[in-house]
Image (tube, rainbow, N blue to C red):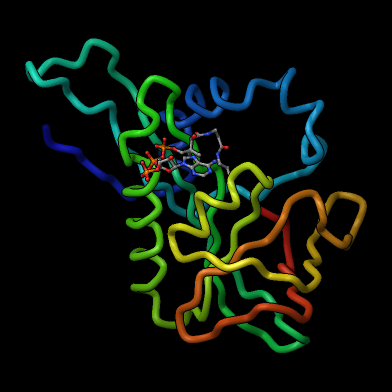
Amino acid sequence: MSIEIDVLNGDASWPRVEPLMNAVWPQHVVEKLSWGHVKWAHADLRVLIEAPEDSNGESPNPGLACHVGIFFRTATWNGRKVDIGGIGGVATREDFRGRGLAGLALGAAVQTMRDHEAIKFALLFCEPHNFAFYEARGWHKFTGEIYAEQPEGRIRFEAMAPFVFDFTRAPRDGVIDLCGLPW
Ligand SMILES: CC(C)(COP(=O)(O)OP(=O)(O)OC[C@H]1O[C@@H](n2cnc3c(N)ncnc32)[C@H](O)[C@@H]1OP(=O)(O)O)[C@@H](O)C(=O)NCCC(=O)NCCS
């Protein structure tokens, strides 16, 4: 079985991703969640994994199996400008979960961000039931404050917990201002 991992332009690849996002996060479910009201940034790049073939070389349920969005942003950390990467929209189609696809896609996303030398660390936001998933993959809880833009203006962003992946900086606390919409 071979698995193909693509890293594509975020806007151009969105039509391929939208059905997976709607399946994993249907509107009627999202609107009841703590982050259901948040206006999100659009991914700059997307890691896509198509449904892998089965052992007979067939694809009975073709389509996108896994997605990770990648974001690039000049933010501030304790008032100083810093180029950071971001991860969002991590999702695997229900019938392909537990096969390592999200782990693979996340690894490809981290490598893509690492290839941009200016990026000092990466940031993602997640709910408590996913903390262990990210901690097992080298992400650390950020205990400081996050600020972000929303249509009503600059807000303290507390809808989900921030986690950091270290490149050349290892922030654990202080103030990060995303200087734009969250992801
Ligand atoms: C979380 C999610 C992306 C994982 O996708 P996946 O392709 O099944 O993940 P992988 O197969 O790479 O990883 C599964 C492994 O992580 C573990 N794992 C998966 N979800 C976990 C979680 N929430 N907490 C702890 N461990 C988790 C599994 O036990 C398995 O461990 P193993 O590798 O030791 O066997 C998938 O469950 C999903 O789409 N969930 C709904 C959307 C969501 O919550 N996305 C995250 C937004 S931040």
